[in-house]
Each structure stands twice: as C-alpha cells, then as structure tokens.
Image (cartoon, rainbow, N blue to C red):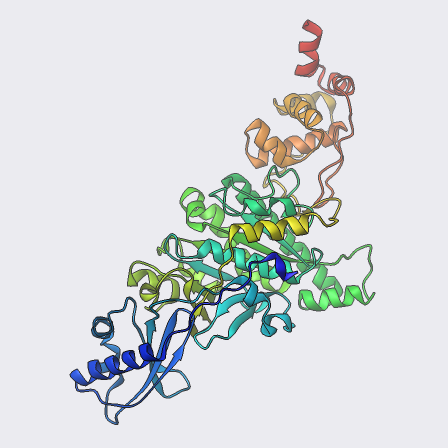
Length: 500
C-alpha cells in the first residue's frame, strides 16, 4: 500500500508576478546584446522554469547560446541553462531555477496514473519533468543505467527510488537484486529481504556485498548465470527472457530441465572504489554483462561520484547508453558522463539530466526518506518468503588438476591444507569453495582444487549448480576415519583431542 510513504507536500506555487518579472529581465538582457524577441512563454516545473523564446528573424542561435553567464547575472540565478534549439519545437529554451523549489515525493510519483497503469516489465519512476508530468521508464529497454554526480546531489536517494519502484510493483518471484555497497551503510536497509528479493552466491556471508573479493566472485557468478540462461533460451528456441517465461508458464517447456527465470538487477553504489582497488578484475565481468546480458534479463545500475575517464571508460559508455547526471563541479565531468555540457549547471537536490540514446531530458527526482525505506522493507519482510534465497551458480576454478588413480601417487598430490579444509567445512556445516577461500585465505583456484579432492575422498558431494555442495560427514570421528584411510594421518582436530 502507498500509505507506507509520507503524504505529498503542498508547496506554494510560483507567483505570476515572479514569472512576469523574469520574463522582462530575459527580454531586457537579450536586448542589451541587440537580440530581439518575437515571442516568450513560461512553463513552471518543480525546481526550474523553462522560458521558451522565439528570436527575431536573422538572429543566430549561436549568439544566444553564448549568453548563459550573462543571463545568469541578469536573473540573479544559479545554473541558468540554455537549450538552443529545443528539438521539435522551433524555440530556444532558457531554464531558470525557481526561488522556492517544490518537493517531489515518492508517494505522489508512485500514485500517479502514469505509474499505476503502466504495462512495463520493470517500471522505474524517474521523477517529474518541467511540465510536471511523471516520467517513468522500463529498465528492460534501457537496458543498463549509469548514474554519476558529485557527493550529496541525490545518487543514493535515486537508487532507493529505483528499488522502491520495483518493490512496489513486482512479485519476489519476478525480480531479484544483487546489491553492492562498499560504504556498507547505504543499502544495508534491504538485508531483511534476503528470502524475498535478494540473490546471493552459495556461502555468501552478508546479503549486501561490501568486500572486493566477494564482488569479484559474484560478478563471475553472474557471468556463469548469463551463459546458463543463454543455453536455456537456446534449448527453448526463443530469443529473450520474456518469450522464455511465457512458454514456461504456458506449459510448453519441460519443468525438469527448465525453470522460471526472474529478472536480475545488479546495483553497484560506488563503482569507482572497486575500480581503484581491483581494476580489470571488476571491469572485465561488468563489460561482459553489459554487452550480452540484456536478452536474458540481467541489468546493471552503476553509480559513482567520481566521473573520471579512467573510471567511466569508453567501453563502459559504449555499452551503457542510458545515463543520469546529477550536479557535477566541472564541465569536463558533464562531458565525461553525457558527452555534452549541462550537468555543471544543475541546482542539486535531485535535479538531474537523463539521457537515453541521443535524447537529453531534465527531471526532478523524487525524494524518499530512510524512514519510508524502513517501513517498506519491514512490510515486505513480514510476509512469507522463499525457504532459501535465489542462489547464483558457483564459479568453477580456472585450473583443474587430474589426480592419479594410484593411492601411493595420490597421497603425494593431496593439498597440504586438505585437513584444515575438511575440518573447516565440518565446523561450518556447509560446503562451498568461497567458504574455503575466506576461511583459509587462499585463492579461488586452489580452493576449487581442494574441493575436488574432498569430493574424491567422499567428504563432500558433487557440485549442484547454484546450490552448495552436500556435506556427507557429520562428526569429527567420521572425518578422522576417512583421512586416516586415505592420507594415513589424522586431522588436526583429532590429533589435538588425542593429546588432551
């Protein structure tokens, strides 16, 4: 229900007197530069007012475009932006910030007929246009989104808006989220939804990823999930996830070999932090997902407060055509994000430029408070969830070691850490490669080899796709017997118990 959100505010609209005053100032400022105006009209938006002018015949558009600073001085306004010309209208636009902005709330946005009556697969409420119309987009058509802007300009609030839009409209079986938050506080509010809307890999310690090793692990798991989904689409003879799920629900696919595929939304709150630490290890799987994952329902939302060229590279921009820019300090940052200027003249607090393809649009993002997010999450978490989270497949190690069949030769090939690994799995009560990697502080390839050796010893079961392996032993005595038989030695735990 929408009453989980705060009611909309009733701010005083901009006065007619202020509109007429600014119109006169624009006309006088342009006349001072010998530019005559044939017509002028105003459209009042939540945070800015668009003044559309028609210059006299013979006036060059480039002359008006060069007067941004002079008009800002004449209007005593911060962030005057000139659109010359406005596509499809035959006019020149001058955007002037309102003295008193109107707060756009998440409730009025989600309650609008535009959002309520949409048939989009993944509807997202972006905010309100200058004409005060609610602007929504379908995430499946973006298909990925890059969000950038300076600190405190509204990126994290916008991410909460995206999540709220999808949580309100979609069932947990239809969409899953992979949340990555290096700051550890922005997305932690969504942890109670682990059995409803979150996707994790086997052995993941926290529902919201914060550690760089875990992030690399889950990105590689998503690449494997993508390939598995493409195999499923190929077997079903369909081209995209919508056709596949339609066939599955109509009973046209074998339920033994096929399953319903939910959309996967990967949200990375601070992309620059991971790039500076891991570089290519993070960028490579993200590029693979951005290039190929659209058809199988995996979509990316990448946010960063550092729009530098070494962070937002040409490959990222080429594969993510939909971008949102909040206010940035310099024009070069705006060009990095949008390939054009303008973001440096925004007014902040959710004022943003949205670019899809070649179309650039100015919007006011809705505001959602922390208390509203908590109420929404609490309401969903109280409802019955799935018995276990949506598990991503566990990546296989890059190297494989074929162990000889002869017992004498095999004894020399056992990994020195195999005893500690078996004891660790027994005490943890679960078996996954990522668990060994964390507990033993080893690389993923070595942890995978140890897991294969434990399978040969009969300590763990075979890999089960996205689910953790089965742990076949339940006591230290069983473990001691197996290791004594095959390795001719006792595990560390058993030796310490004997000494005591």
